[in-house]
Length: 630
Image 1 (tube, rainbow, N blue to C red):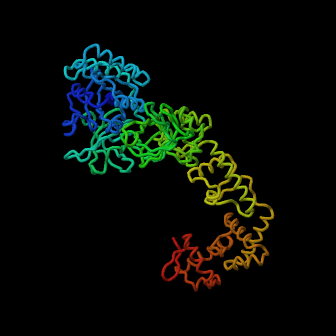
Image 2: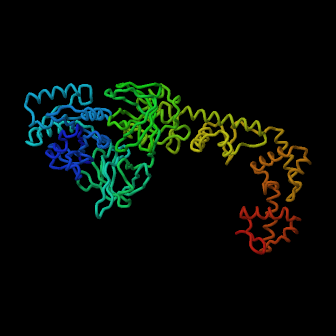
């Protein structure tokens, strides 16, 4: 088992003392860059760590507070368990305080502590007023019940109280499930001398092992993990909820960047078309138009996006809507992931919400009906699974694919699938792919109808070839063999090699008479029959009908096809092979002259007949003629 750990993230307005507070708490300076130290502001994400009295490890992500760097704040918020919303006691609530609080709400961060810094700069009366303002400020947010802890990074006063409060909250944090596929959004890439490229990030699900093969998306790199660290210690395995550093010596630093994601399953797909649930924040001043552009943030990735509202002509501040987003670059996303959208030119968070469908098959607004949207937005896990399985159509979908498509524990997805199978809503094939039962029934119906149609149009043929049937009914080659098997088990069809026939199909009596007529005619020719057209004229039947009869006789084993225009009966063939076997008992080599003497054959028949004997491994060709194969 992994040692329990949580991620603490900071949030708040510029110059309210986030980085100074973290340094006082841990002794670690999160300002790494020269310009950060010179200007006294955080530009890049900073990291620190410490251990709570209960033994829980805390990884800290210190984010920028300046309005120009909110995008980096959003990147740092990926995977945060508890937020420390920092507000300076001498300044109170400021614009970025409000924006960061909204971002925490949008990202679903609901555990936090409000840290009232710079306590040493104000008197007790102002401190109490600030507390009252803060309570009113957060009353409609996820942090409405968050404790307010005044601290001073200068005197150290209140730091112990903060640690105690954090320890209590940390013990209430639900551990991230480890049976989900591993995902780590990269928020930092560095090069370490002697080791090579190292990526860092917060593991949001699953686990990763040293030596394991992983994938870097959206680029599609396949890399092997050489080394792992968490909280500064070398480890053999990293777990969800931890800060993890991964060493990839086989890739250059320039090939990796923030926004990429490390996964351990090749079932993950990238996407640039998604369906979203959009909360338009109340502090915005203007309505959103039905089509607008924005910056789209998901985990550590930031791309441009064009958003199309569904069933709305405009969206007022504080309202919610469904929308489609077309992204400028592919990202990795799952159902239930949180995202943030921001405007251009102005440093304002417009809103955000949940991803409802990360892999849109169509960008047609009319496709997404109210019922469809409500199932994904308000439905339970079974509703979501059914929706995605219906969209998978006749390709079906595997448990592994569902586990990366839906942000849920694999054990819960398995249970939901079992429930749906028991109610006959879903059917699982031999290859562990799931289909909606209605689709299976429809495919069976279509297949049976076409087989019946084929029999009516081709009464002399014993059945339709599998490849032809697949092409005619137009289903995927994934579902096709499974439905064939089901129909066979239900005794509705008969499978004879590559032929498929209805269980009730029998060749009619007049067809049997034709078969006998054709067979007798060819038997009379022996090894040297006339062309098909000549025989059809002799028998006074249509050439097409004769060819169908010949095809059926071949499948019945009564005749042998030598080439498209050369057929002989099976008894004639066996007699010829017996005669040749007697010949080879006396002579080791068969020449064309021998064939002429034995059977009276011309080259027109001799060459294809000998090539047929080679193909069935009865004879083998040598430079002087043929020999009997042993």
